[in-house]
Length: 151
Image (cartoon, rainbow, N blue to C red; front, side, top):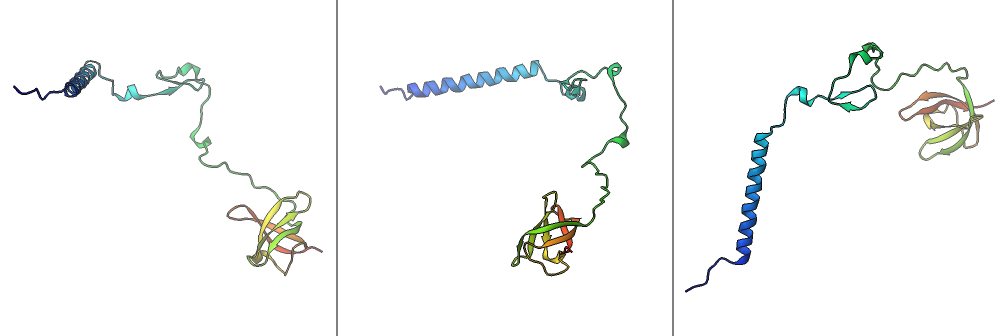
């Protein structure tokens, strides 16, 4: 007679496959027996007075303040317009690249540096000149404009 074609490895693989099938069937039956609630109320989460997330609604007696919708600001906070007393500032051209047409002016007193483009010059200037200038908001910050030699 011939030998059986069923080897030990085949038997073990079949056992594992049957065991997985039984575990899957058991999980399926457990899900049917204990269904998860899927209503809207069950999905709600609340924040208590201490900032912790809970599943119970907050107590209305512990409510502290009334917030008006018009008081809520969305986006960046609005800056109050600065009343600039010193509209014309003075400084020294700290760096200037003639080939590219831009540089920086270092303000006297504060030491702040401001970007300047050659189109902001009212007269021909070079690095190291004392200048007076005004500031305008550019795409990336304040830019020096209307730059001329200081008297």
